[in-house]
Image 1 (cartoon, rainbow, N blue to C red):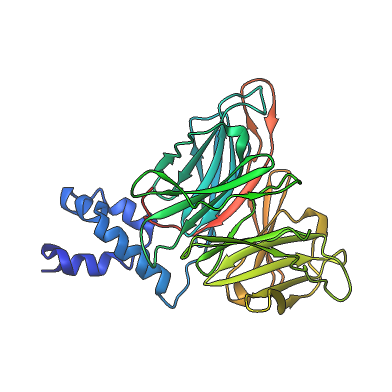
Image 2 (image 1 turned 180 degrees about the vertical axis):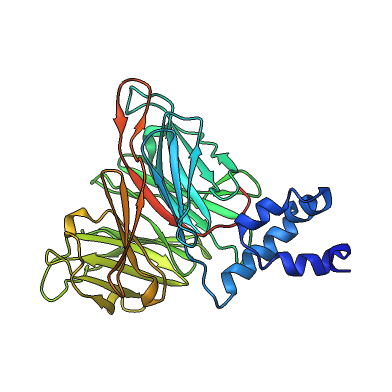
Amino acid sequence: MVVENDDLLMDLLVHLSVKDLLRYRAVNKRWKALISCRCFHALHCKNHRTRKQKQQPCILITTDASTLFCISLDSLQVRRLTLDYPFVRVIQACHGLVLLGCQQSIYERKAFMVYMVYNPSTGMSRVLPITQTLASVCGLCLVHDPSKSLLYEVICVWSDHPDYWIEIFNSETGNWTDINQKFVSSIRLKFWHGVYFNNGIYWINTTPRCFHLDLMSRSFRKLGRIRLPTYLGEIPMNRKIISSDDHMFLFGQVVTGDCFVYEFNEGSLSWIIKYSFAHLSRSYYRMQGIIGEDMKEMWNVFYIEDSKLYIEKLCDAAVIMLEMDWKVDVGIGVSLPYQSYCQFLESFAPV
C-alpha cells in the first residue's frame, strides 16, 4: 500500500540520507520522478535542518587541480569528484551548497576566473553570470538557508578603487541587483571571508575594518573593530570563524596546542568563551581545518600529512586516520597537494 501512495512514500523517503536517495532513484521511473521533484527536495532539506539528530558534516578538499575529495564523516568513505577546470578553489560553503572559484588556465594564476555554485552531493553546478571585469570583484559570499527556502543568493562586492558597491544574485531570477549603497575607502579592502549569520553577512578582520550587511533591509554598515579574543593571555596562531545552527563561533588554537571555541554575541559585538579543549596530540602548526557544530562532541580538527588524513575529536582526543593519495598529477609533470577545504551537509538543494 505504501509504495503505491505517493504521499505515504514521500513521508518515508524524506527521512533517508541523500546518498541512499540517489541510489533509490534507480528503483523505477516513478521513484526517480518522486525523488527528483522540487517539492520533495524542499521537504527533505527542511526535515534534515530541523530534526533533533544532527547530521554529521562532510569535508570537501580541493587539490587546486580539477579533482576534489569528498569525505563523509558518517561512513568515513571518500569520493573523488572532477570538474572541467584545471584549477578549483573552495571559497565558501553554506548548508549543502559550495561556492567555487575555477581558473581556465593552468599556466596563468591571474587567468579568467569562473565562479560557480556547486552541490557536491548531487553533482549539480551553476556558473554565475559575471557581467563586469573580474579584476573588480573583491569578495563573494553565498547565502542559503534550506529551512526557509530552496533559493539562494550570492553577495558580490565590486571595486573600482576607491569606490565600492554591492550586488546580490538571486537564484530564482538569475539576475544581479544593486543595493544602491556605494562607499569609499582609501585602503584596498577584501571581502572574501564573509560569514552568514542571523539574516546577515559579517566580515570580521583583525583590523578596525569590520562590516555587516543586513539581508532583510539590504543595509550595509561599518562596525569598527571587533576584537578577537586571546586564550589565557595567548594570541591564537590558528583561528577560523564559522556559523552553525544559528550561532557564530570562533575556533582558535594557541602555541601550546590548547584549543578554544568562542560564541559571538551580536548585541555587544563581542566573543564569549563556550568550550575549551586540552592539549592536542599533534603539533599546532599541522592543523589544516576544523569541523564544528553547536555540540561539544562534534568539534574536530583535521590534518593532512603525506598520504594520510587525520581527524581528531576534540572532546576525547580520539584520532581517526584515512590513508589517501592527496597529490594529483595535473599533466605537466607537477603534483599539487591539498589547497583548500570546507565542511558541508549533504543536501538536495538545487543550484
